[in-house]
Length: 124
Image (cartoon, rainbow, N blue to C red):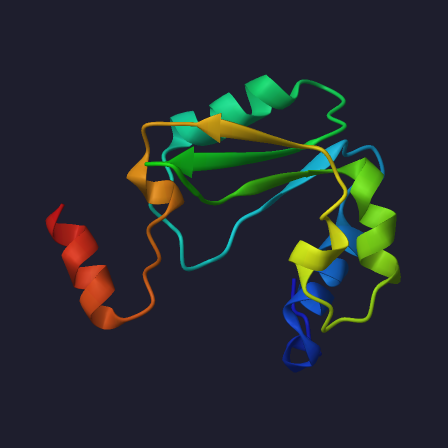
């Protein structure tokens, strides 16, 4: 997907992705591109816990701190889609029930924002 208005706000990019999601999708994973170290098992666990028709946000945590990816259920999409593209997502989903999933995966917290971050991740 190419989102030409990305400079208008992060929520605008999410909105573009939601609009392209299959109509039968019960949820999407919101997964920042700078967090590539999340383990496949972590994603499988989130999907397992959420089940086929999630009504809550499922969010991993590691070491007592929240991480990514977020599983966003369809029941919160309309609020996101109706918002201005620069509205913080945190504000839009504040009232959506949330399940925190404690996992042994430091990748849910690991941002790789610089070449140094990348090189350090390769050494692990």
